[in-house]
Length: 487
Image 1 (cartoon, rainbow, N blue to C red):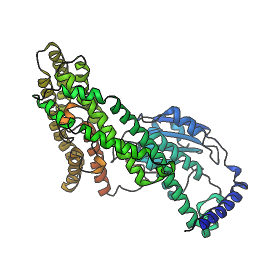
Image 2: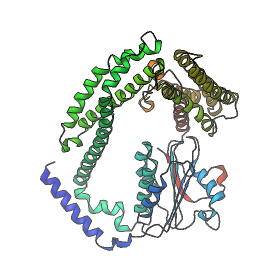
Image 3: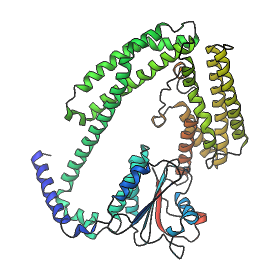
Image 4: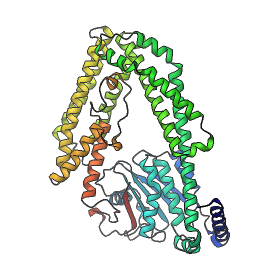
């Protein structure tokens, strides 16, 4: 399409739009009469969310409620929202108990179960297709774990569709703009893609520059640290193997930096250049993590002045796993009362005592740093085995047949191995994370990832992949307007 044609199409479409919006469309100017946030999942930034929602303009005075909770892929979000409303906010329900209250718009989110839902009073309800539109407006951000921004985007789209005047409806505008639709849509999409690419490029470049600057400033110190790591140590020798490629990787990162900073501002909008900048960011982040590991290896194995801090950093991933066990076992369908769950809790309590003992023995010289690292490796290996055993328990409790069990088992195994892009395993910046491959230890986060995806696969196979409109067995005769869907 020629630029002249595109400009004329955009100009014509703009004139139509200005004509439409300068007329009776002034009706849209009602800020929410109230904003209620019930963030049971603890994922929202209230300081950002509330002012943003309060600034959104609806066509009619509307009360906005936001509800979050941590569920599973197999849950019915509609049922959970209704259960919560009955228990905590009966004013959200109509006087006869059968509908949502007039003037109400509820946006609901389950970050663990990966569900988003929208619910309206009878005087605010929209069509099923528009409900889906509202939910879809939030999903790209929610898939990226941008919970607050995704919620804002969904509510903003809801404001655009709830009680929308006929002259702003999609059908009407589509009819008016038939002649220029292709040109406008193509131009808009092209501009949006370039804008998003430019923003992503700038963010990636800032991340890359920060990591690269850290590596550059510490380069001499890193070389000194590597020079005194004992090669006779099993751990030290493996870290030194990684260091032998450090300078080559640094030089490669320098080349990527030069190429990234040579880009003109307009070139930042192109996808190939975004890929280049992300390569620079990833390479710099890996080097930034590795130079910290080299420093910790030197400090710990040689009992340098900073050995205690270095040892604490080695314990951090294991401590994080132990601390996350109870929340993992407390989730729905997590079989928290099973024998394998009891084994995990017992191991957690024992390990927390052992960590203190190892640290004390390391401090008084009763054990060597190598022995301490061996014990930590063995403990994390034992936790991996216990998590695998508990995965079998969870699969046995949720799956109804061998086909479903295989679906869940495959997702659990893929999560541990990191063999799929969705389970991309990040480099663990620790001595054990450098010595052993990323799939060697089965952690609580990877267990949760496999657990969520496995149950989602089973739910999809059972026919639960689309929109859910009912309120479950506990909903009774309730028939309020609303639905939920996965993201």
